[in-house]
Length: 177
Image (cartoon, rainbow, N blue to C red; front, side):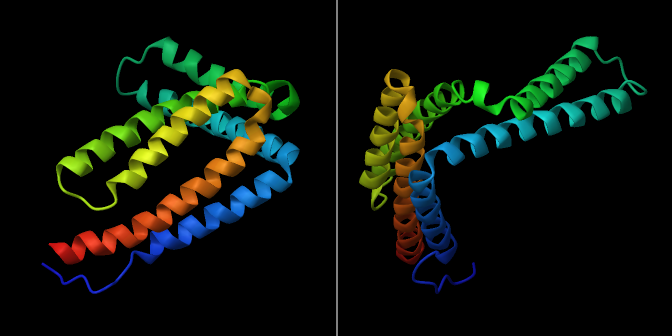
């Protein structure tokens, strides 16, 4: 086994710092943040649909592929195009989708923290706090979706702080073994 000589995991620390910077930018420009997120989601759906259409036509030569797969791909393309053409109209949906993601992520973080505590891992409490914060933010977004840009900023800063902590913890855990 290779010897781990690094004191910290600098990759996580650098990513954490970048997320903090992104959070500050999101707080400074909330409208732009919403437009960028909606545009990125639109591009994602569009690319996914194009990829699925290409896969459908490649696969149908070799196997029986349901027409529903093609319909799903076309739906992705249409949804992506609508998001790109009318980002302001769809910005109202984005907070709800993100809130659901925060809720799921918070639940997973709490579960991982419980497992880390059971395994005797250090700093499991930071993950627990992060999970609870994610769930609280999800609930706040469900009830006040207009606060989305501020929550994106706060979550980016919080996630950055957590990743910096994780970068330090990785070094501690590896040195303990």
